[in-house]
Amino acid sequence: MNDIYPQLTEPFPREMEKILNKGGTALTYIPVSEVITRLNKVLGVDKWSFKIVRCERDASDPDFVVAHVRLEWIPTVGEDFNIVTRDGFGGQKIKRTKQGQIVDLGDEFKGAISDALKKAAQTLGVGLYLARSEDAIEIEQVIDASNVPLSEHEQRWEDFKDASKKLTKDERDRLGEYWKQEYGDKPKPTSAKDATQEILDFLYTKLAQIKLKGEVVESGK
Image (cartoon, rainbow, N blue to C red):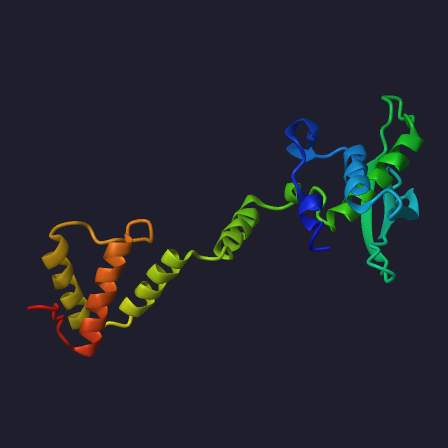
């Protein structure tokens, strides 16, 4: 599942997205035909199916058709397989003419089933980005970025930052003095990008000198 999840959750091209005005709000949605195409391509035409558990007019409000759909997927791995099931619920308001006659009840049943199928597919990640808040997606992107392995240089910088946080005020002042003696008014690095290899070598040397309370003696002097 982890191998194909990125394929299932990949955003659809903009031209495939449609807009539905509902309750004064513009909602973006993906046609069910595109959802089915995504499932066919990623899961396999012969590996998934869905069945209608229930589709009927709502008992509490006959002007709505409600549907319950169950999506089933058989991800074959060698000779072993487990059936993955996802349930989705959808609804459709019945359209009427000005005279109160139902326009096409069959279309409403079809719409409710399509809505339920898309909700079931959404639990597998298909089109899920349309239902999630921008804040949630941004947080996930930050988490994903934080999981990217650091380079050796970046790790060295992070280790220096951790070590410098443990310095006392006097020790930080001494490190600042060493910096001024070596680099004058040059701004101190604030990230791995600012800290060259030479600067990191200098900082590590002075950090060790401070912690060991020693002095650097150059050979030949």
